Amino acid sequence: MALRALARVNLAAIERNVVSLRARLDGEAALCAVVKADASGHGAVPVARAALAGGATTLAVATAGEAAELRAAGLTAPVLVLGAISAEELSIVLGANAEVVAWTESFVRALADAVPAAAPGSVNVHVKLDSGMGRLGTRDRTEALSVAEAVRRAEPALRLTGVMTHLATADGDLDFAAAQLAVFAPFAAESQRRFGRLCVHAANSAATLRVPGSHFDMVRCGIALYGCDPMNEDPDATGLEQAMVLSSYVAAVKRAEAGDSVGYSRRFIARSPTWIATMPIGYADGVRRGLTNNCEVLIDGRRYPLVGTVSMDNITADLGPETPSVRAGAEAILIGRSGEERQTVEDIAQRLGTINHEVLCGISARVPRRYHRDGTPMP
Ligand SMILES: Cc1ncc(COP(=O)(O)O)c(C=O)c1O
Image 1 (tube, rainbow, N blue to C red):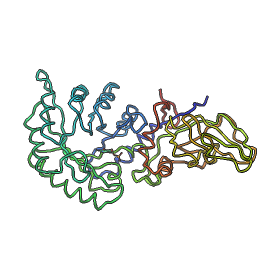
Image 2 (spheres, rainbow, N blue to C red):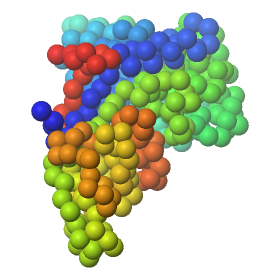
Image 3 (cartoon, rainbow, N blue to C red):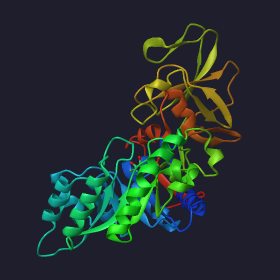
Image 4 (cartoon, helix red, strand yellow):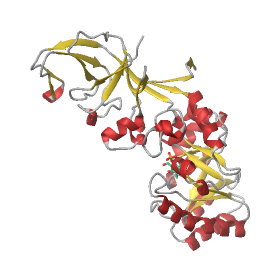
């Protein structure tokens, strides 16, 4: 029985992607699986398990709540919260036994104060240098070293674990990425000279694939886990496997005569008689309205153009003038393969003028996720 909208995720593909990424790492670098934003819509907990099975040693998320979600599911691997943490969120971070990123002494003090005196467990802290991303972290290397010093002073409540930065252009301008690394590497070396062995990390997926000199002790991969291309081009070129298939089904096939319109605002009017398929998936599911008259759907191994306005709950495709072979009930693929045809997350992102991450994050909670390993359903 077809579901109106369905996201199928192949966890074996994610596991293999991690194995494949690890095989490309420089030296002994470890892989941190970045599963923020519900693993970009793939499901943080199942993706985290698959990534760990593939050899990831650490998980990373953006928020305290996301760390708590992983812990609530019973995951015991280290979890690093990459994002800013407000005073209100400190207790959630501590409750989740998560690792944190610091770039101000005031945050380090607040964190240390929040660790219960009666049970001083160590909170692992990574100090962030802003080497050119211009968001979180301090640009001032001396300040970053002072922050690391403050963490050291707060032992045993806190433990200085790592130093990190984030690259702004590993998916594009590699000269700027090299310039960022030229800022970061001496800071990392100085930190280790002063404070001993630390986990040094900088690379996202793009840098993991394109900038071997950025791997250091650990890489932080998000989008590559899902088999998507960090450069937003052909994902097959990465040698990774796209893990998600987004589908609907043909709920109705009917004839439109010349002059008949389809959908809100009549943004498609048949010039000549044609057949229209309606599929019950829409922008509330993540098929963005910007795809109106601007996308294709794969049915029975063939591509058909979407026509008419994408509605909240429905889309429509033009099957052409011949009596269609497409029957009500047929599977309709928005992301994935059908026969020899495929439509990637990147194809859709390009049509929308955005990146694969945003397309994936837009697949809403209304869309059920079903997990399998190479076709074998998982509970
Ligand atoms: C600090 C940090 N590291 C790593 C990543 C992973 O990036 P990507 O999904 O491009 O691999 C992100 C995600 O944006 C991030 O914010």
